[in-house]
Length: 65
Image (cartoon, rainbow, N blue to C red):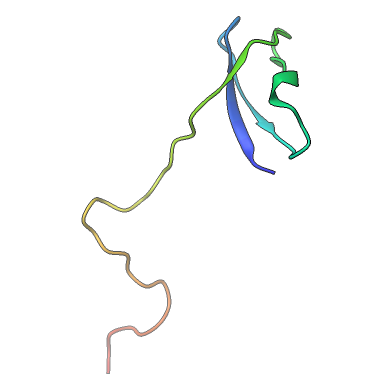
């Protein structure tokens, strides 16, 4: 059951909705103005690593012998 972001084409309100497998996305409406014209937005992926860096272990050896 993923959470998707939507934007209303009438009032430009951005909102999130939990979508069940049996739920039809066309049945959604804007919680602000009630319009049925909503677009699913592309979710942005966030990462705290910089390009070219390698992850450091969060557990394990401390590097001391």
